[in-house]
Length: 560
Image 1 (tube, rainbow, N blue to C red):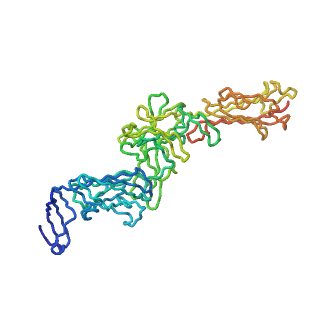
Image 2: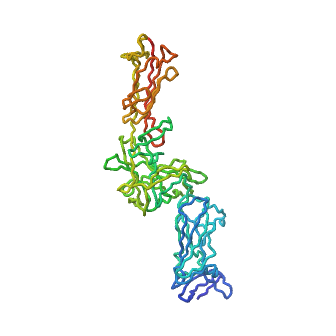
């Protein structure tokens, strides 16, 4: 041992060797302080281990995999003693030599081996999150002694601070954070598990029993894939016209949507890819349209909403998209977070411009990849595809397990048709006489009985679509009164009094009085109005009305 004086302060350096019953410690320490007379100050912990037999504490912790800010959660903590001697607990041993346990809340798995502090002791509140904080009620100070090779379990309820931002966090159990137990190993005292903190999901998803991680191909627009028929068509009620559209194709720019387990992404489930091909074609083509999501950036009192691009990224020679990261991108000097709602409309995971494709049936496929761009095949140990089957009155999405393709993706069919409708009205005719003059008069012989075929007024119109994927509405208006109307499928064999040929061509022969009516016994002016409604939709329960067709023809019926 040596002593030397430095500006009136005694500096002590020494080696202290402590021979224990079954081992020995060695330590070196220095202090720049004035010791009390006859007393040498020794550090609280040996720093150089020569040989030790003693306790060896490790920890394990479990709890819910998901929670929301402000929620109380239950945890189970198990402390193991893997050493050769008993680890003293505070219930039986002196507190200076006994362990306690801290429950720590962190945004990463780098948990310090030190006593944690609650935010209230840092000038904050119980509802604030602080990195590596002691959770509320998270210090287990009344601990049991653990014999060599034994374990003990503790249970407690703690609280997720209400101001915790959404993302993936770590809840850790730290055994003996004050380093009061002389252990044979000090680097293994921490156990942790991951928990996702996010908004309460509305609606929820009812996952099939036995499924752990899952990815759900969900919808085209707002048309869930369980409402898309095997032939790629769908039924819906048009929100604009109120007309029921059956066997409708898809068109325009299609937004594809999928859902996934909240623990995704992980290193083994990192990317996804949408591909498509014409039915029966050998090759698949990748989706390449950019997909982005907004995040909130708070800097210097200014809030902005930049876009984070999910893809496409070139990974392993493919165009892949990220599953949205758990945490928003970090920006120096700023606070960033994901929005708590989808009011930005960032609901799509892929876009397909169907107008660039030939009309017909297409297979759409979703695949999953790990962080190196290797395809992940669905299984019980990786993930499962699930698909929607319906929705409860409360809004919960019901699902079933999806059947993957032989190559490990999930595929479904959509029928694409961006072709427009046709509309035309024939010139009204009586026998061989048609409306020919520019004044629009159709003249009849009053002496000819109206029941004669040659005296009837023929009205013909053409409501067409190349594949009959349309509906129509036809009206004859006399003045301001409806004289005749009909509507239905363009492929109908009949509609009202009109006879169709199955391809949108309709006609009917009227008696004069059926058109003139009792208040206009001799003459009247008419307008014929035809509207052809395309059925094609982008998935949002309204038609692509830019594909509609219209025609109006006016005429007057008068005696010669």
